[in-house]
Length: 174
Image (cartoon, rainbow, N blue to C red; front, side, top):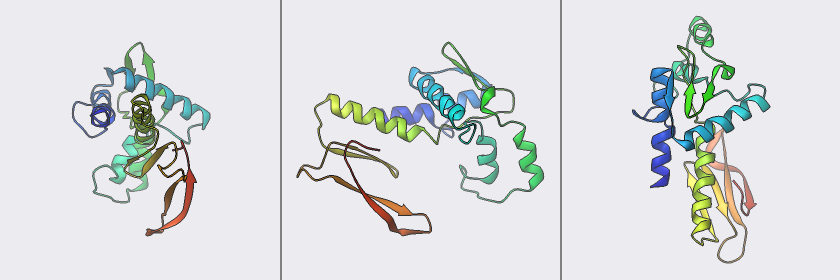
């Protein structure tokens, strides 16, 4: 239920989500979880000097990454959308997230990690000492396996998705 609730807040494509409301209206009063995630993500944008930028959604949409209609846009189309990119123009005021006209944000780079952290906290609070949480390829572990061994998590090879590039052994890691 919590995973679905958070997805309902963070989704860029789900009508009525906090992110859809921000993108459609330029401003929205948002849930505390959305506020926390946007604030944290903006800190990551700063620390990476914009390598992570929450405002690139117009470019993602142009390439068709969220619609499934993938295409290679013309340079002029990309240049046109770049005027709407710039995480420094995302502002938080009290419980509101505000963006400039034409901007759109996307929390896809950070939402699964936030959700995984939250789910692991909930499970731990309910006495779970050993678990794997897999949110569509984002994997987090609690403790070790029931037999005391470390969890083995396969890292997919991006050039050969049928095979793992490597397997890592982890405990309490994402």
